[in-house]
Image (cartoon, rainbow, N blue to C red; front, side, top):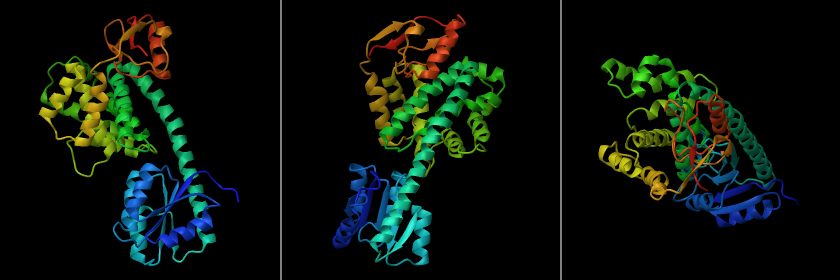
Length: 373
């Protein structure tokens, strides 16, 4: 019989005979892989993925099914999770729903036909999740890029920096294994939005690095909170608002990884604008604190510092010669010297349109410096 789908299904149990029985009865319908116990399941998810569905026995020695479900929920949230148990008591079921977000329960022994139909339902759920993800990433993120590009015309320095932070945060997020970075990227793009609520004179004073009064400093520190308040009531933006609010505060336990990424990348990028040399910035951060996540700090050093130790050759181009994917070697500025886009940014369609618009207004400093391919 022809397979219903190419998405992979992972079956997890501590009894090899049970696993082989399921495999014999179901492998004609699905792309199956089996794992003997929780640790083997994690190894399979890490090295043989991606998987669309996981069916896990609840009672296993070592890592229990509930512990496995919690780890999978955290590291591979797209995997639709099914619990297989011979002890479907109310407490076990409640824990599985609350801690592992289980899609369905199956009682052992489970007939092959029932498991087949349940896996099919889980695959349909997986397809719905993926369709929603595509919708979010292509439509919502596209809308946010339009918004931030427009805001960038009002405050080129703040939003130019946010575009660079977004690119860097995405890089670190992918290196840390985040399945989706759209909320992290959105938070980076929209982090400066709270500045719109502050008096224009205060924003200008801050940009010119003039001394602020204690009251002005306190108001400026609240800008992320103002921005988060604007965003949190918009559908699908509550977590983005949470990341913006948290990353502006001191390190706290149990905070989302996206907020920690945003904090370290933002701090690095802001310091780099002042000190210029990324290696000096890294040493400053080591000395000044706060205590960064060592893994994340190593990734920043590897992806944002080591790659700049021997930078590629730069060349100059006119605005009309620029192409998507090119990386700015120097800030793109207007004729007054104000930054429009910051060095290190990978140019996308919106950036090219912005530079073309400023050029058409005869207000762009030329030529543009980009890294040679």
